[in-house]
Image 1: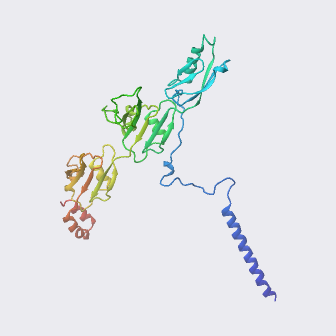
Image 2: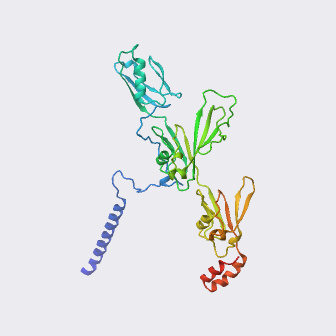
Image 3: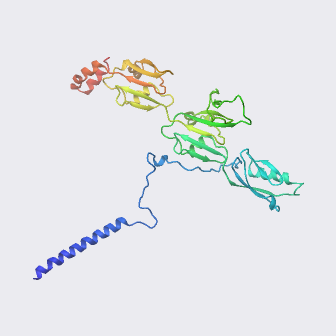
Length: 367
């Protein structure tokens, strides 16, 4: 009887112990610190990596004082004259209306310069020795737009006048697929409508070669635009003449890099980014070299010529790779094709029977 009574007790103890272990394990897995979310990592929006997530507009304080612009809000304080003190917004034309004095032009002036001007206007007729203080409460001018192949595109509020390189740095730097040219689009406001101006009038300026080019604009807008180009590859290599000084409202666009294509008898065919100065020899190297079955002397480069048809350039790629012929510079959207050698394709299985080394040696001399 004693032995029989011990079995149910042992089973109960084992079951209770198991339930206790399971309860402790489950409670531990659900435990979290107060105020902490259960997810340790939050995924960015679909199709966007964490590094590519846009950052909000920011304000940078450089070594120079902020210069006022349209939309900025200022607080004018006149000592012992509260009726003259006011909080004012700079209008679109860069001015504001001051009590008693009238309209004052504030654009491109610092707070100190503006305070001195207001004090001079009040001195004499209104106050004997006015003490004026101007405080910038809100900054809405100095807006710069960055888009394209950068880490963080967006709208940035930056004090002073940043350069192209500084704005790119604020935007997290260039993306891996960036092109070699930056386009800066700048609006120029006309003082009065020009009857000869059409909605497509504009001008384009290149830092290397200033040549007119049309730029679109909304119908009825009296503004014109100019476009400047800066060579990013040159800028990053120390050509600081390409470091454009930006103006308020500038739109900086960094297009993605151009590409070229390598197809046919290469080890890794595909599309590759076109960097400045990329040559045919470099293109074949990026494609991991020519395969043993290639007819390298009958290579072809198909190139866009501005029409519906492509220009066909025949080239002895084998001679270029060996240095017997001059290397060729590639252009955007070039298609490099290395055809198959029927003779090599037929004899390659036989050559492989004697070993890879023989196959490569003979294959390199076949047409």
